[in-house]
Amino acid sequence: MRARRYPYEERVRTIAIKVKLTDSRYAGVMLERCKRVAVVDDDPQMIRALRRSLSGLGADWDFSFFQDPLELLEAAKRQGFDVVVSDMRMPQMSGLELLEKIRAFSAAYGIILTGSPDLTSALFAINHAEVFRFYTKPCDHDLLIQGIKDAVAAGGDANLPGDEPHAANDDDRLVSQLGSAALNQLSLGVVVTDREGSVQFMNKSAAALLAERDGLFICTHNRCRASTPQETQSLHEHIGNVIDHGAADHDTRALSIIRPSMKRSYTMFVAPLTDRQDQAGGGNMAVLFISDPETQSMPTIDNLVVLYGLSRSQAKIVHGLALGLRLEEAADEAGVTTSTARTYLKQAFAKTGTTRQSELIKLVLASPRIAAA
Image 1: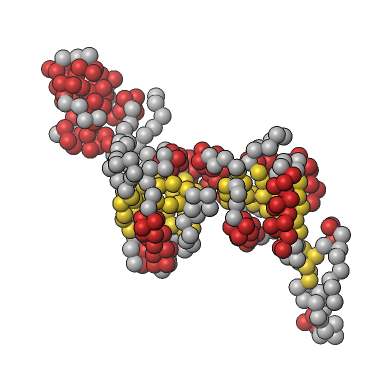
Image 2: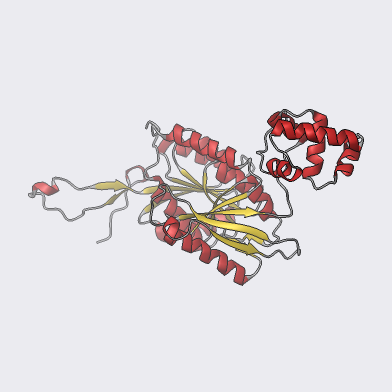
């Protein structure tokens, strides 16, 4: 018998249909509301395509389609959504602005679709706007469906109008913001992927590196790939191995990524992303640490002044040496004689607790990068 179609506000999914009302174990029918998914795109053709693409999931989920993000925002305030799938660029407001407004009163998970893949926007979306997935158009049908399923599974029930936000929400968000801020200070590229290599997080250095598409890039399916099929396969095998075996097998797995530009290859370490050090497996995520040997992590002259108490003149000499200049060249760059530069260098040894030029340079290259004083 065909199930009755309830009005939107009353639509529910029956978990137990056949019940024995005389049995105390079945005192009533267990009901669970459908998962509510909102989809918005200002392009009517795209909305029709998404409606067709997602129509087969209507039995379990309640879809609402919008062409105006402001209408979706009002609907979210009235009834709440578990997942919001939004176009990135819309006349009224961007998809990121929409999701940030919704996140102010709801725990709905956001998925962004964009016709112009912009890694800077992707970075902001994933790291700051708390976007769950970031896909490029045209998005593969199965990929989008799986993304929605993952969002529903991760989020549970969204906060409905009148509900109190989860108590840990603010703390979790603060921890996330602090972690993102710290990672974005690293010159090392950091990328978090799932088993399929789909990017879940990347810091600023990784976004800039991947944007060059010189050996590593993100394909239209949001997966991290190398420039050759062989290296892509090796990369994904490394990811799978650390996820399957984690710290019980190898703490990290190293590989080299060749660059079509003929610049020196990227070096990469793949490690499991785990919550516990004693976890046998690597969980469901891997973290890629990517180093570009062509780019040196170099504190500024102001950084050296603040970090080691150097005078600006001393810091200029040390900075020049760390860049690979000879002492005579560093002196010329700083506008002093070689004899004076040698004196500044000895003073820098005393202030940094080093005794040799190589030791000083090693210290400088390992220094954290901080804001200029």
